[in-house]
Image: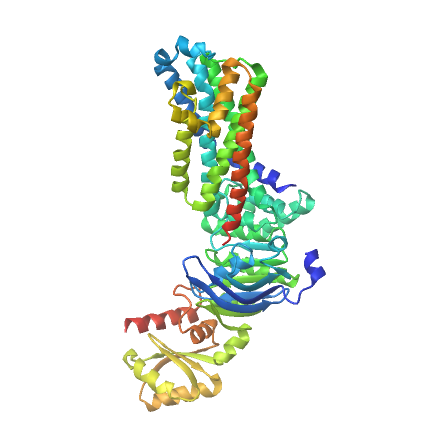
Length: 343
Length: 255
């Protein structure tokens, strides 16, 4: 922490033209660049195999880049990995817990390894994370006896117990129930307000939308888009309609008719029609008019804000993942994609 | 608190929590000790053997069986490393601000505690069966310390294989492939002078052979400082080759 303040770099994380080619020639990163400010929650979004985990592992000094530069807290990953390790916390996609140790022992071990000696302060922080992640009932249990969700919570608790200035979370919410997710987001929000920089990867776009200050979308080892969730969404279009038709056989004809309308950004046809509009106000009337003229009766209309799914689809050409946590927007997209494939 | 101490403690806690592993690796040598000393006694427990200074065939066997126990534990150390790799614990250690050497030292120091305990159990059973350490407490201490040193060298090798291979089966097979010849190409079961020339030649570069020879002298004949120094030199060379190679394997794992 001291070192970081002293050096006061412009950004907590800086990545410049980073590439990684794994032995065997599989290119995972094709030159990505981005910067994360201090205290920012930065979301790294991408489908499986897009290079998210590779990026994180390079930043936490577990993997070496093939070319390009990266720094954390002003320290270069190649030249000063030791200094970076003094200021980070990390949870991997697969949980890092030891079946033979108890929950409490894990937290003591991490605290000690990160230079927090046995003290009242250490005890206080351990109790705090046990409280935050609702682990008090299992504090004395060996990790091998914990459920998947509890192991995940323990893993995150391990990453934050020493209060690292920069926190890396690789898909932290996988396997967490909704309450635990909310607790995690609350905790991260609080830590970020106290100046912790948080870099997280996720496939859950809704989550990134609510939790992140800024988002980068990565696909095929390239950064395809970067910005605030709001900016990204407004670029895709301001509004989104979900229509069900009286006769679903009309859906293809309806989609064709709507695609010609100037207010319509895109149309997905499936079990329902998902129409993205430049603006809901003018667009809604237009959509109804077009379908009426074509003699296609509408059964229901739902309006909504565009989600990051829309952003994702727009910039990567495909849906982020099939099974999403919650939210009608995501499942309708799934339905649309699924319907298309069936046809 | 130094990371090596923290990690030694962590690994000892793990050993205590899974006592079956510790017991299993000492059970095998005990079975061999009882079996070989009984089945071979008529054949091997001869005036010829005693003429060389050995008190009994049992006394000859004890040091080799201590070595077998610590080599098994060294092998388990490598398997535990694979477990740490698979469970993500090694990554947790590697992102901590601790030296890579302390990760290895924390493991082998904990192993050495287990190894001394196992060596003591083999010695104890040998004593119950009638084989005493003729050189007394100092000789006993020397035997325990030297087998633990060899065990640490073996554990380093197993950890090296574990880090390079990242595979439990591979570590297991490679470990047994090394352990059994290390035992048979030594005076563990038969004084070297009764064995073919090529075995004597191989034994000269086998660290286990030196430790077994020193152990057998301490059991029956008496201390030989020259042989002690040679043993320490061979172990030191092995450690100096293996420790940096293992630490390098931690670094290579980041590529």
